[in-house]
Image (cartoon, rainbow, N blue to C red; front, side, top):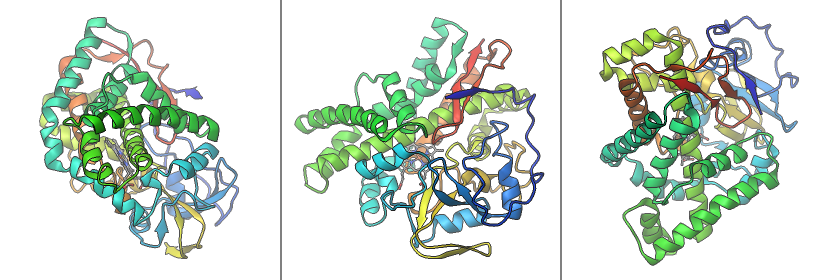
Length: 421
Ligand code: HEM
């Protein structure tokens, strides 16, 4: 369910540190907290960072967990070998019942620990190196241009979320994997259902089952006749050799699609919205396109769309900022908390394309750090650079008040962004 979003201009960044100091370990604090402004972390994070940096919260599932908001603590936690990402642990802090049950059933490697996790991660890493991704640039650019050609030919106003953001992210990942004639809405629905906090286990299972079915057909076809794509490579090098089962391969492919699509879609849409809301930033980028790589990293930091993706359980007692997360308790490393920590980022709410040492954690940290981050950066650079260059009159359609924000899904983002030109 979405809620109407006020224009960020009417709803300025909520001032940090104004909340009353929360009582330590009080389980009456609900998580997730809502963003007042789509371009900032929830206002409560600033108060937590100062007053209760390792805070007890109640999740939508009624379970309790800890949330960590300081940059140093988030990095320490995510690189601590005593932390587990195993979704089968009873106190795993899933934000929806559906996610927990379906995760335990399908076992996506993002929610597993070594040695299992290491095995699948190593299968994917060679495909997503800087060098391999650089070689994909012409193909990604061609896709972006093709999608924009179609959009411009059809004319505005248009909802940029499905027509551009989702189209770019889905077609790039499908092309890389070798999934032919991709159905953009099908993939969007799978992620919408599997990533929603309100989905039941049956709904998540059904959505993922549909995705597994489609992937199983492609895997079988590539087994018969390999091509020059990622699925063929994984089939030839890991499935045929008996290193992984078909089910394990399907699960790895499914999480790669799910993790890569939704986050990138959200980032393209939200970054565009931010640029349209702050014309001085748009002008700066138009005047000097060489700023784009730095701008993308700044958007990643400020927007932190994967804020509450790093869900963990403490396998042993873990001390952080003078507090102990007891063994077997769930804990969430809040990436938006870390990325807006003034101890690490000077004036963190300012969007600054000239920031030096922008060591944000938008892609996580430690052993689960995003496998697809180089590809994500490439997609964002191509999608944003092309859009602002080729559509100089791009603007919000109507009053701009009908932009809708997704508050209920694993990845923060927009449901709708109507634009015209
Ligand atoms: C802007 C876009 C993206 C953002 C913000 C993002 C963010 C993240 C984050 C925060 C994690 C770590 C989760 C954790 O610690 O539990 C992660 C993991 C992952 N991401 Fe991304 N991601 C993006 C794009 C992509 C793309 C394009 C792909 C692939 C095509 C991808 C594939 C993955 C995979 C497979 C993992 C699991 C890694 C592991 O567990 O070892 N992501 N991503």
